[in-house]
Image (cartoon, rainbow, N blue to C red):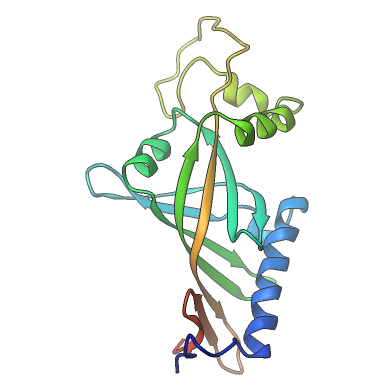
Length: 188
């Protein structure tokens, strides 16, 4: 049953929402956290579904956003520039939780957010990925030396439109959707 939008979310739903965000925030700092590497699904220019594993870099419960880093030349960037609607799917075996986050993605290839991200990435081995002269997915060849000062880091800023949370349990599965109208229980 849907919670009417003019009524506050009850404490059980609010507690669950807080737990979801807590897990997302933990995934950023814990390399072994199962939610650190969700699947990003979108649709390409030909209307075909695309899905790939990405790394969660930031989670902001107040802004309702998630951040992912990628190479600006990646096919997913073109996909998301053409159609910014996507889904992030998280699975945690230890919690028996699945989370599907319906998002609208803004691709940022320059500006403060990108430069702050590059400042962090540039001090790691991952920097080489964003300095490579060839785009991800291109045919491998011995690269010519390019301008190693030019990075190709882009930030995918995903605004959460809705969460669909599912808990699998021997005692009975539970499912809840959170969106702009509030929260409601769903049939598992």
